[in-house]
Length: 246
Length: 275
Image 1 (cartoon, each protein chain N blue to C red):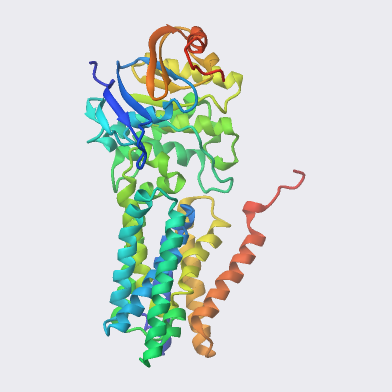
Image 2: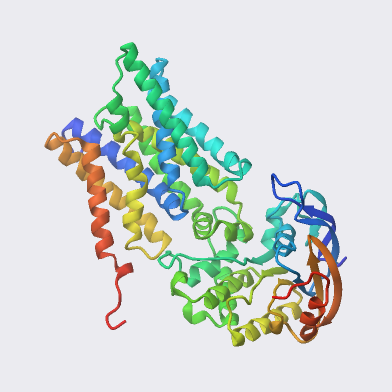
């Protein structure tokens, strides 16, 4: 197993009070720098899988190792090294946060209690904003941006962290066609630079053209684990029994 | 502490008490209003109210019992909302009702027994009833509230922005949340005697809501809310005692009036001309 990868062995996750696990006995390994797309119908357990990998949900059985750390025992340490762009967000238009405030938050977990962001942290935030092309928005209130701009801010926040692994839940959902291609290229670039990228997405047109790995999920289990070109992902997933037709 | 400014001892003590209570409550109020959990305020104030009434019933200290009851609610709140898998607001509503019922039960029962209990002091406070030690305790808690926000400013800012995003960023959200609950518990318990169980909520919520009308940064909120709270509270104590008016209600009404004015003149709601 390569350092900086994800290794799940028989992992199940259930929400408290529920008898049925949302993901069931999942096992796979993802090497550092792999570009992985997780597909499947609604309710298949895709978001749960991401939040199990970064330790936000409790593992009820099995073992997950991320960046060489046992997720169940070192959840916070794992999250310091794993970026996670959440799917659903809504910000108050009057919320007292500028884009700059939000992007630098990606560095907060790395700093620990009592330490304020320094030059290196601000530089990382500036680089992430520049990469996403949102540096001109730095002083704008986040609540007053469009959904697509907010999506880019959240991606920049996670890139500012310089993560070993980047998990993204429907990162293209608020983006227009051009922005999808633009963000798709950025994600390909960071995977090429050695960062493991795991995307839950139905926007297959934004995926990179080169070889990527598909993990298809259905009813909490991995129903397909294969490699193909980015432009073949949609066809592969549609062919699965009980597959998504979104 | 402020005798060099105010010669009249009664007014001096009242001003000091109101100043320190307002600083502590308004700073913590910024966090709970921005996190959308301001109902923690009225649940905690009524827990303190219930604790004080139990303390008085058993002949102990009202303040100590108020602190104990609020701390108990603070300790229960987190696990209860996690175990019950219900929204924090629902849990707060249940605890609020329970605390209110306990308080009314003991106050009513003491009145039935003919025990001398000043229920209105518990409900509406008495700004000149505090011992010097209680004023010192308020000074300490307002200082601790400032230190808490200063030391954990980035964690608090991230949690206020979005609790899930803060957690995903690698911030330990739970210890900060519990520390916040305990700080609120102690602050409201110590403020109960001067402001009262029914009005204390105003000190927690309204200064932060006023500041929110003008501030575009979290730092701005933390700086302006205590200034607003302190100014209105000190003015309320001064005017109330000078003209023999009830200090707590007078100050609470002033806060509410100021909030209405703030909403009307807020630059955040201004529509640009030609838009």
